[in-house]
Length: 430
Image 1: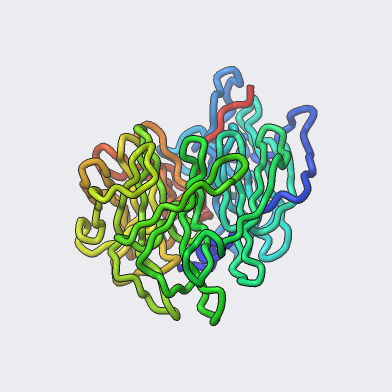
Image 2 (image 1 turned 120 degrees about the vertical axis):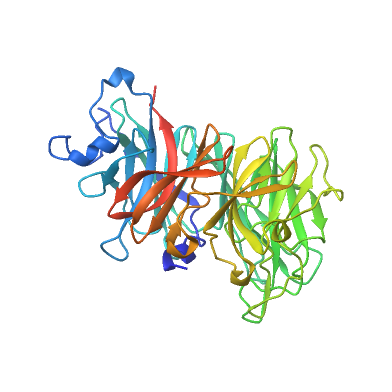
């Protein structure tokens, strides 16, 4: 596992100040050259009639040449073929370890400040299909952030028993202003002698579902627990973040992982919960439960005891590390052999899972697991049953199109000189 992947779990951000730098003349900050100087623009940055431009894919990539360098953002017309070089293209980010979220047709680039405040930069597409920076924020490290309609909910979570409070903040993405904040006592929401630590938060209707793991507040056992075979979800009313109930299950270990979403809400409102079963005690794997999927039916606040999907059994010895929802009960899962179980491992083999009929099919057409040096997980982009995933090997960094209906992968555009870290899409600002 790379140092970047480890640090990508130690996130972002509390908006303490907002410093706006909007462009009055809509001048793009993109540093791209014209196509005569830069033939690589044929991959997706050709000049076009502005009236025909509707959207662009936004791809983040880290240059390979140097250690500790910042990502570049590329605005691409297509992801299906061709190549684009980071040399002379894209918008360079300010600072290393950037992470991303899209909301309200804006692209938020978040700097992990490694214990210090860091910038959060917001982009929109201008009429020429280029990225314009429209605002810049100061940020501190948080461990969870997620979309709630047109707001972003951020949570800074403590592991200190003398100050067992998670601080939450609501950002209005239309005004770029904080509109609410508060604290959660993480000792009070768990019925043992440890602390609750949220793995992620997910919008379910007008509520926030927050799975958490139980972690020790002592003993130098980082994220270790004496309760490895239990799953919990705290349910909060939004926007006041008032605790409504705790949903529990003892058929799996905790839901999600550190800085990893473990919930998927399908079209009928049912909630599917994904457990990697990677709990540890004193540095050793300690859960006796398999990696599995469980369910909470729409409108209910208990786990459905009639539903249990054992992923290790269905995959013949693999566990899931991340999930991407495609639609109609279909997920793409990052999978890894059970022997490699770890809190920060990202699975390099992909599977298509239909949670309705408990069916698992391996994706064909991908590079061998042993050849993959980096693969995107939570920063994939889904469009028309196709999941766009960044895959880097010694041969290069490509965006693969995963067809969820056929379980086939097709290699698309190559990002030369970089490692793909995130994929998104923006429409032209009207």
